[in-house]
Image (cartoon, rainbow, N blue to C red; front, side):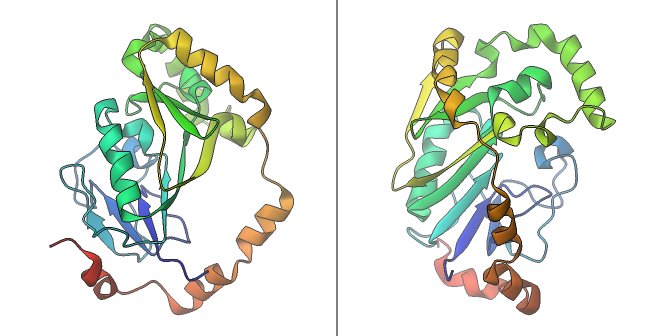
Length: 231
């Protein structure tokens, strides 16, 4: 409950539990809003620190926990090994979430560079350019139009089929593949891991004491983080 939590790549929707944010962009960046989930980058009063040269601006073990949600699909695949090491350098526990392949099969967002899944605690990844997915672009544009007009928003029906999340400790196993056939063989192993969050979890999340305390006291002052920034 007293963990110091960093969120990487908050986009327009930072999590209530994070204490500060890190991103390669800020509110002045001229960038496709799809990078932020379709809206302007927001901090909700949390301090925002800049990621430069793919390195987090914090000292080793500065945080107890990291949230990194819907970021990995935006990172060039050759930068992912360094990115995972940086996460574990700054904190030894991290929750990582990203879309499953079926999401981009329907929508194929241009800002998404990779297909990913998590199988047996390991991130499985392939560059979208190696999948041939762009051959379906005319159909996917239609899917995006349906989503934009709230006619078919897949994540509202089966969220766990659309996205996957996992808590990693000390190390983030990462396997980068070149073959789409091999990638899909791994993805098929996950059929039994597609579950909906329970109603009890949803209730506990809403009434979490830390969440209530943040509502009352507000976010931490940026000065609080000065001692953990790298020189």
